[in-house]
Image (tube, rainbow, N blue to C red; front, side, top):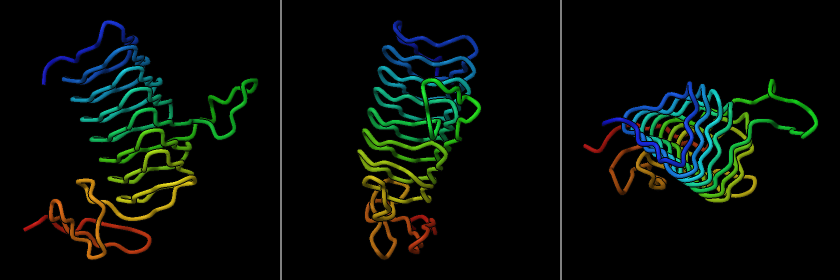
Length: 190
């Protein structure tokens, strides 16, 4: 995979760990104490806070800030200008660094452009968060979430397609079993 690429305008602080083959583009700042996996792409003007853990194969588009308290699993896609928060009741004159709420983002999640993820809520693996949506509660695995506040409108396959009622993905053929509360992968196409 090779050594990481860091654009000359990017800043990677001492103590940050960056995996093989990761590319860090223009005006991005990676804070010390953060970990970025292998094969990631961090677009222009991305910020990664101290202590943030980012898995392998993650793509972070332009203008995204990943603050302390956020953990991102492998193969996550973060769309342009999506927003993570880390304090529920911020005030400029009140120090709340000991109140950062954890926000785990599961494997394969997609967060659309300009979506907002309110801290303290988990995004289940392979969830699909629509552009401009506002997440105010935990998101189950494979859920398609849209709106403000976001509501589940469907279930999504690992390949990103919205699943029909029979749970058989038209694109890849994977099969799922879904209830109104959850969706789980059953088997690959035969």
